[in-house]
Amino acid sequence: MKNEVIVGDKVFELFIPESEIATAVKTLAGKLNSAFEKKKPLLLVCLKGAFMFASDLIKELNFSFDLVFIQISSYSGLTSTGNVKAENPIPETLYNRDVIIVEDIVDTGKTVDFVCKELLNVNVKSIHVLTLLFKPASCISKQNIDYFGFQIPSDFVVGYGLDYNEEGRNLTSIYKLKKTI
Ligand code: IMP
Image (cartoon, rainbow, N blue to C red; front, side, top):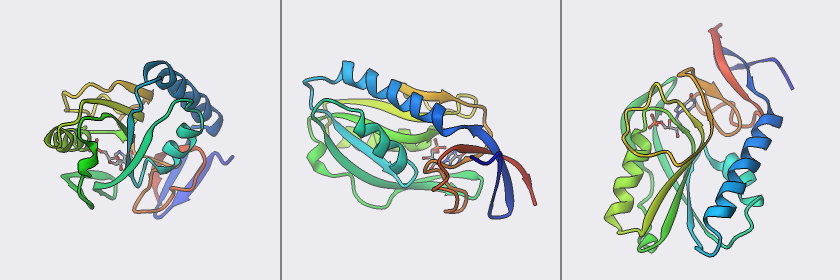
């Protein structure tokens, strides 16, 4: 595991090593295993960032669930554009389901707000929000974040599915921005 990586024109430093991520994923899965046993919830995974987290998480789940992926975009470079859009429509099969939104990171919370609004439009039964990373100081959403792995400062991070201009998603640990080269 490297202490520093270069992604695009930036240097990032080690922030959350993969062993700590693995522990957090197991803890989160344990909480879901207790809360959703017998409910057959639907996991709504927000692509692209949450693909690696979701993949590791579902291996630890021991209840029956459905899996749906949606692709949401709002970020450009290091900042949220605030212009959240879904690349594909929210499926109507979510009607009357207990939905767990699976996010990689909640930053401003605009993405979560957008997804929740879409889910309410298709009359889901309940909504729970699960995210690996949560930046509370940046978050302007009133939506409750039911489950999070780590609360982090408002630094820009890459790795474990998260990207900087589509690069760095394959890093197995999470790195935070150090400097521009
Ligand atoms: P929000 O709508 O501002 O909460 O941002 C949510 C989305 O922005 C996430 O799903 C990520 O795709 C992206 N994002 C937010 N913060 C970061 C970051 O630090 N690194 C990489 N992507 C981020």
